[in-house]
Length: 441
Image 1 (spheres, helix red, strand yellow):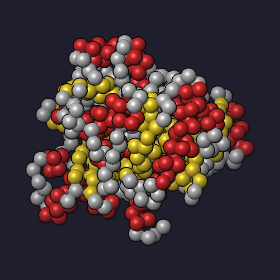
Image 2: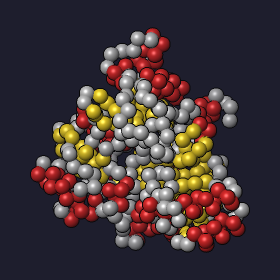
Image 3: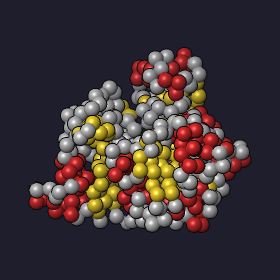
Image 4: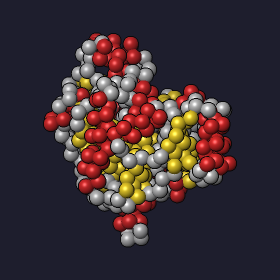
């Protein structure tokens, strides 16, 4: 089949990398792509927001499976536009995408579905929001209602921080229109996890569990980012948790969405907090996570195109999901200053040590030979002949090995080979799992 992936980040690079290995795929395209993706898929110079041009391309090239990658395209109705044009596409409708594009909407669905989640209130007025925060002594989570690239959430432990977060979102418009309305909810405790399910509107199957690292600095400190790293599987939680999440969260939500005449199809990404036996849903996303997708695609074993096509056609019995028992780890290399202001156009060096000739250091060479390492491009560009930075998150270095310890070691050894001015990364990706495996927690 012919497949068109829409997007330009590390998530889309990971999808293209796995789709490139699908025996059913003989034509792979990506719009607009990036320097890493362009080595696997034919680049299509169309912006991911130009739905009319994407539809025309899909028709002219007889694309069998378009995959609508980024959240802003889903929220803007890319699936609806393709379907109106008579084309099949993998992803949710604009109405169903409100599960991510509006946190207030998602909370209302959770409440109706009986899904466990933190107590919350929705505010359009900053003074009312501040008064509510004061009633909770400032111990609240302030969330911009709309899409904010993963940065519109502030966990507050005092009233001053809460008031600043509310003012930033609603008055200073730090997140643009996304912060016109805010959701304030109680602070949850536990470990944050990411669960993914393939959904056909009526039912769902598990696509795996990951743990993401959202804060910019080690120890989960500093402001939130789009994600600084992830790993899968998550050994400190039993495999039975996935079935529990399907039965207690995903399927009840699917029933409510169908009853509201907006059935959900595509990938449902459940962000949750687990504390002992208790689970609480933090948020929903309506696409593959980033950087979770990179780790999951390293573990995925099978024909991804056939699986996603079966889901898009509504036939989950044909959507076979098989994940390797090995551990995959992703470490994100970010630009200096991210998630705040950062420079672009900085030369990147060292990728050839990983993807080209073997490294000279014997210890590193042994580690990389014992694992599979892939560097996915997130925010890069070519300034011929030089690869340069072009975003806040620049590269996602991903390794898979038979143990988590080996995968972590290889990911960091490879990450250390890559050089660009201002490079920043967290040094504790998978730290909670490593402590669990060592018997330290």
